[in-house]
Image 1 (cartoon, rainbow, N blue to C red):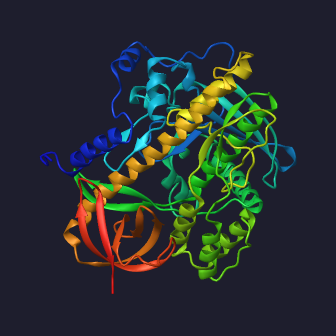
Image 2: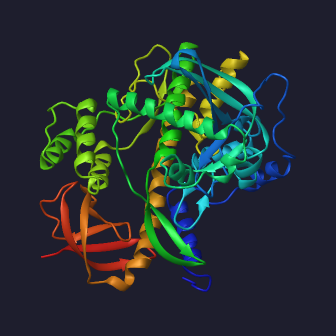
Image 3: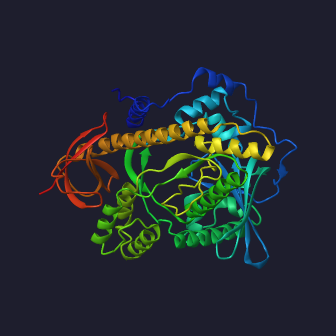
Length: 488
């Protein structure tokens, strides 16, 4: 493979190849690009939208994110309650169902984030500009309007269309440091009168939502995602992307908003796509893992019991908690999209401990969210649903499959990046955690660089969550192979 353009270019070529092997398209077809050229600007606001442009909307995302899907704003109400509004980019206003751009989005169903580059679901001219809730730009949106009581309960909610303007584009790390008293006020906050109080109110409400979520049995997990660190074109490291208070603010607002949308569609007798996480099949291994940590879980799957155990472990061993979290995540299994007909029982989301949950808040990045947006807009407009039940069922299965394929691409490119970094360290020893044990082999994760590889020798008797000392024996950047042997 050519190396003249450096490691990032090599990884990008690997990423493109792996995407194609997994049934994902790295490029946009000619018909989609032709449609893109015909889009002159952002969707007009129209006369049917509520005018909420004067509110102190803000976005909080990664430092380099420009595909902004959501804004939020808070209003204090009498009696200690707070009104939280979440605005979601109206992508459907620009990307019509059945259009070439929609057809391409329905193939991949998600943006793919690799250590080499991002492969967006929609062209960047849309996702980072015309359909993004970009700073200072007037945009149409779908608003989820929630009243949250002082104790963190959503007591009332509504969904409607509105025009909005992003008053401050903010980043997770700087906002979190400021909220925690460890950094200065971000300049975009200081530049907008009232934004400081606005963010502190949003943070307070998000923490109240978090407390209620945990009390219901939602699983508090800390997982580490590898982020590539480059200097120019040189790959320096794969470091964990850690949670913080600003990420929690967005996380709990989105969880609440997605629940509101699921119930909104159900109440109006509309079929929908639900996001579910089934009761774990490997609960017995989770019970055994808890016992190895000095805990006790019931024989039958119980989200509240598992949640309480995880909270206690995080308090007792915060440094080791990401390892436990990863093991639990692996044992819980993957989420799925399913068809939900009105009146039928909901399957629910075990990890969030909720019965009603959908994906509705990231239509620039995920196709299920765009589907849900169209279903909501059809209800609001008094139109027939844009998808029948058979189509929704097929889309649910396809989106689940492609989400899994995208995750495999991301993992494989991360392994190629890690193989590149680890190549000079053959023969060295590492502390590792078993992350997978099954027919495909036994896999372990090391911390520096954050990388996962296969245990090719000495894996007998190991299971997910076990700690083990390993020796690096082989790497293959092209195939993303990292092989370890159990150290004596």
